[in-house]
Image 1 (tube, rainbow, N blue to C red):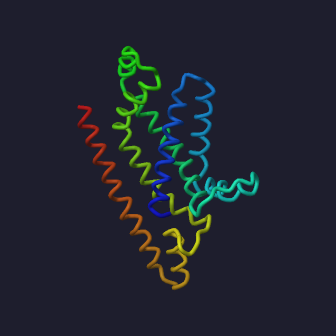
Image 2 (cartoon, rainbow, N blue to C red):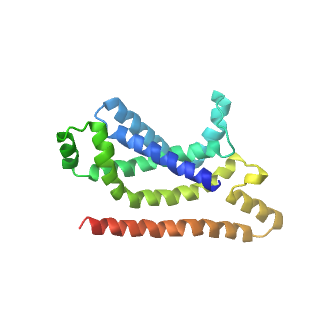
Image 3 (cartoon, rainbow, N blue to C red):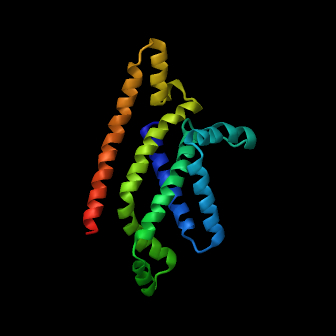
Length: 204
C-alpha cells in the first residue's frame, strides 16, 4: 500500500489494540471473555487467511464490501495487528505500579480519566520497544495484500516485483523489492533496540 494506507493500518491496529487491552483488563467478565476470544482468534489465524476472509468471504457471504483499493487489506491487517498489539499494551499497563492508579483515584479522578491521564501515558514508555517490533512485522505483512488484487496504478511492491520477474524471466525485481523492505524495516529494528535501551536506563 501507499504511505497513507500503511499509516491507516498502524493507527487502526493501535486503536484496536488499546481498546482490546482495556477490555482484557476490565473487571467485567464478558468484556474480558470477548477480548480474549478476539486476541486468540486473530493471533491464531494466519494474516493471509484474515485478508481472504475480509476481501472475499465477507462480500460474498454478508454482502459487505469495504470501499477503497486498499480498504479490505488495511482493515484485515489492522485487525490482526490489533490482536498482537493488545497483548503488548496489556503487559505495559500491568507494568505500571498499582500505586499510580491508587494515587489518581485518591485525588478524585474516575477510573477512565486516571487510566487515560496517568496509567496509559506511563505504560506507552514501556510499550514502545515491543510495539516497534510489531510495526516491523506489520510492514512486512503488507506484502500479503497482493492476494486481493490491485489496479495497475496502485500495485503493491511484491506484486509489481513478481509480475516484472515473470515478464523478464529475471529475479532482479524481487531482489529490489526485498531491498525496499529492508530499507524500511532495518531502521525500525534499530529504533526498537534504541528505545529498549533507553527504557532500561530510565528504569535504573
